[in-house]
Length: 110
View 1 (tube, rainbow, N blue to C red):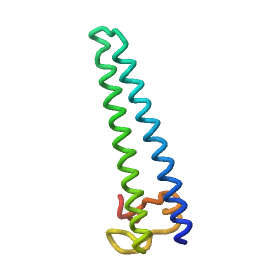
View 2: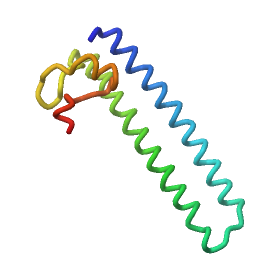
View 3: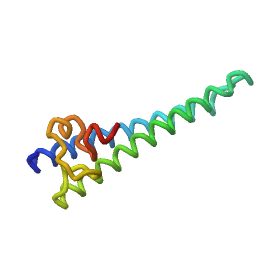
């Protein structure tokens, strides 16, 4: 894959994930504020906790995605982008277009 195209894909995806992280943090703050303001019965007290766990899971997945994109950017700078970390074989451009942070071939990831 052309390095300029790879850089464009990585940066576009990084910006999208960063926006989602910002939105997720704002939603979590709003959820926490709403839970603190609400008077809930004992049977409803699990709902804010479940939402908090869900918010945490989303934030964790987004952070992991951002870290994967950062690693992709480092591989691009090192000249090793587009090569499987496991086998050293080239990752097809179609896979990199779909997932610019791909580190493995599809058969290796399964």
